[in-house]
Image (cartoon, rainbow, N blue to C red; front, side):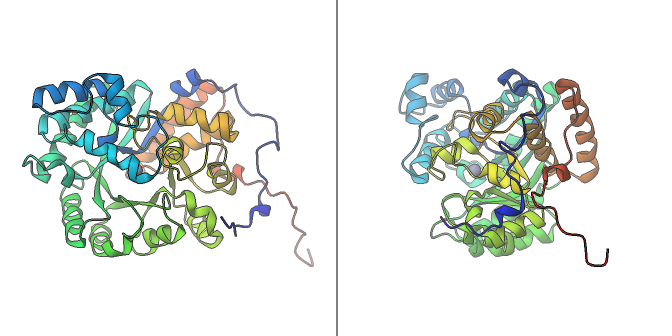
Length: 387
Ligand SMILES: [Zn+2]
């Protein structure tokens, strides 16, 4: 793995100063207001609900007890490859082919998020994967939106839908999904995404779908640089106009692109556990999150798949603390960057950020730092000549 980025320009904050802020505990992280911007509906349901829905629908699952089913879904286990990991979705999708089940799992996902103080959730799914029993893609989107609305009414949790297209599908199919996303803009859909295996399925094949998205002023993100090199991220940004990047862990391999992403403040949707589970990174300690953060790249912390990866945002922040040296001040910045990167209108986002900053200050005793304070040059530059 070659690293061209000019790392020496910025001091790594780890070991450069004593830990800042109160002691990090899971309880404190749980209490903090948070976002989850990268969360797949079909990877984030409850095992118990799967078993109930399978019973009601007459669907046979690999196991009829929670532990056996969790094992079949690789829940929390390291997989041999991204391909292995993706196989688990065939199981979850088998019970997600009715409007009732989609409404239910969307509601329950938002309820689970509410229980760990997620204030803003973006749920993504590929509507085309829920049509095996004849459901129309419009009904798929509307059922999920209905579940999210019910949760918002009950718990106050705000949310939006990201419509996923799949890399291995034809450009005409991804275009159809882009049309669907455009139709539901301002009706709960806040963005468009391209998911699925990167190798052999370049994002540029789907440039026409993204042109429709961009021409309709809709937000978009692309899974890129997860199981393929920085070329994939380059295409996501320059062919698809991605406003955020899903994962992007392999951005460390191209310093020029890294600086472009940083200069344009393109947020990375980081999912630490998922990256280890799919072998995109070797282990927690070598995850590039620490370097991205120190370099000033806007990073957000997300779950990817709450069931299949067996995680929560609270747990992911805890891992960043335990394995990547993030102290409380750093974690507060990560949390705020999540809110800043939300696909929300600017005015709504500003108001939400104002509330969140006040809440973080009251929980931890100090407000979050501004991003400018992250940049601490190690070398003092000489004054300009003649000064
Ligand atoms: Zn994902």
